[in-house]
Length: 186
Picture 1 (cartoon, rainbow, N blue to C red):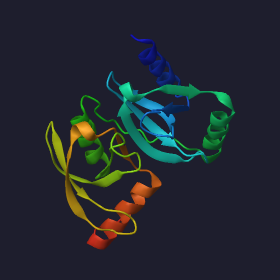
Picture 2: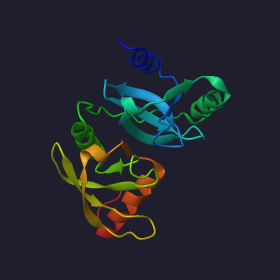
Picture 3: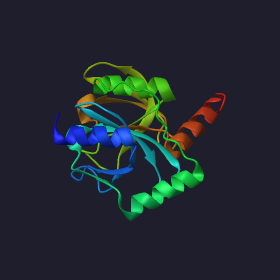
Picture 4: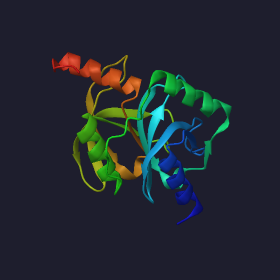
């Protein structure tokens, strides 16, 4: 086992709060606990600076540039997590392939948030997977909070750098579309 995978295993086992960096893709770290990982993917249960659950993120292990744990900032968030009685959002997901990750997230939450940070760090596509194979997916996209313009999009799986769900913005976007569609709300 490599040092990287061995360290991820120890951090997962202890449920240590970490900041995971992917410097060449994003200026921001992912703050959370490692729920699961494979040689290809790392699955984080995220927390915000107030110690509240902030959804999940699945990223490529090969994109990790550094992982930090300990220190005042993470210790403070850990104390706030205890105060808030926050627990990691950690449903079982398949990490066998990017297609399996997307299928698992879609099945668990009813939607996915697809990030294509290699093309543009600030672009995210939130919606429901309409169809998927080993090369591409068709996403019935929700659009943005301001436009709420629903449309379909075909995207190659090789363009995807991260898959998220259940952060506050994502849940709000989904709520608005379910409300407009007349679906029962959670």
